[in-house]
Each structure stands twice: as C-alpha cells, then as structure tokens.
Length: 91
Image: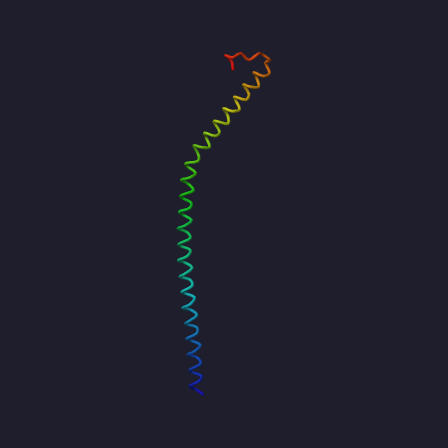
C-alpha cells in the first residue's frame, strides 16, 4: 500500500511538472507571436507615414485646382450676368 501511495504522488508531481512545462511553452509562443505582430505593425505604420508624406503635396494641389475652378466659375458668372455680347477676343 505504501508503494502505491508513493507512486501516486510521483504521478501527480509528474503531471504538475508537465502542466508547468506546457504553460511555459505556451507563454514563449505567445511572446514570440506578440513580437512578430509588433514588428509588422511597425512596418505598416512606417509605410503609412511615407505614403502620407507623398499624399500631402497632392492634396495641396487638389485644393489649389479647386480654388482655380471656383475662381473661373465666378468669372463666368460675372460675364454671363453682365449681359454683354461675348466678342471673339473675349471668348
């Protein structure tokens, strides 16, 4: 009976040790995956910042063109409201 009791404690101790080992392995895997994800997020953030720097001048140009179109429309409205005949020189 004493042998079976001693064997039972050894089995329980071995099971606990296996659970600790499995937990440590899972923690190591999670840390590795978190490291890889953070590196990927850093790369994406860097690329996004580069693209944003490229897009800023384009947005400025679009705003400038929009303002030019507004000015042209207002000039056309003024010409159409003046009621004067459009000569070939003015056209």
